[in-house]
Length: 295
Image (cartoon, rainbow, N blue to C red; front, side, top):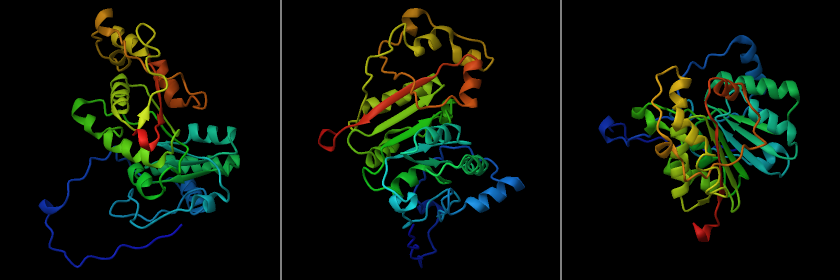
C-alpha cells in the first residue's frame, strides 16, 4: 500500500455555498462503536485481513493518493472479486471458503459488521479475503486499475424504499461507470435484492448502459416472473404488514423479464431467509461487461 498525502491548501476563505454539491450517502449512518471483544479482533486484524486505509474528509472516505498493489497484498496473482455491502460477511466468507483459488475484497462501511467478518475470517483461517471499511465508489475509483476486478457483487443493498429517498440508492448511471471501469471485457456484475422497485430500477439502469449486456434478456418474464407475482398480490406491502393493493393480471404482468437464475455462489444469508419468511421475492440480475469498442 502506498500513500501520498494531499497538499494542504492555503485558501481557507471558501464559503459553504462555494463548495461542490455532494452526492447523498447510499448507506445508513449507524453507531460504529465496537464491543471489547470485537475491538480486540479489530486491532489484531488491522493491516492484515483488515486493510489499514487512511481516510479523507470523512471516516468512510479514502485519502487521495492511497493505492494498493493487490498482488503484493495477497501474495499472489489471482482473480479478484469485490463484494460491496458485505455486512457481517456471511456470503463472502462462504464464497472464499468454496473458492480458495480466488481472492475477495469485502467493502463495508459499518464497523461492527466488518469486525464480525474479520473475526470469522480469523476463526475459519480464510486467507483470501481482505476487508475495506470505506465508501464503495471511492474504493472503486482509487484502489483499482481499469479492468483489475473479475467480478463485482452487490447483494441486498439498502433499498431506500421511500420515494423521497430513492435518490440515495447506490445503483445509478454514475455508479455503473465506476463498476464498468474496474471490470475487463467479459467481467461480471452480479446483483440481488428483495425489493421489487429497486429490482426494476437496477434492470432499467443497467439495461440502458452501453457498457453492459444482460445474458438473460427476456428470461423469467410473464407469469414466470417474480415481479408479476409481487405486483399481482402486492407482496411488498404484505411483507411490511400493510394493506395490499394488488393489480390485476394484465397490469401486473412483467413481459420484459431479464432476471437471472439464482447465483449458485451466493449463500443464503440470515437476512435473505428472513425476507423469504415474510413472503418477499428475491430478484437476481447478472450483467456482463462489453468490450470497450462496443461501449
